[in-house]
Length: 165
Image (cartoon, rainbow, N blue to C red):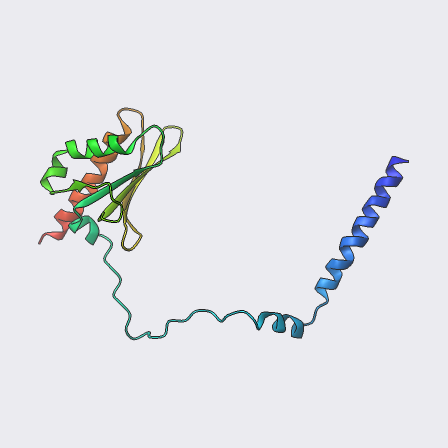
């Protein structure tokens, strides 16, 4: 008896939803074009001859002075990364400063906990949203904040050395 009820339920389901599906599939092309007429056209740039030159991604690493630190990890706080950055000799040599205002920053240094002992750091130019530096590291064998500070500042230093003639 229960299998008969299951077959009846399935048949009713197919009849109820199957007919709506068949009806939806039998619409003509004329119907679909009229339905799309109310939508706006794709946005096209008006003046293609006066485009701006895209920024060079490493420029923010070469000339940036203010760094905003943003950590989404519960285990590595912003202030710990800021402290590790400020303790590095390269930080002082390049004349860098830490800011707590993301709008004033030349570079935003983001740190995310990836998987188990893995962390990912990314340096972003806030004016263009271009990733200018980054890396992945392990928390084993040292502090995450110290490793982030060391590797990020090495990348900045390499970009600045490469810029000098």
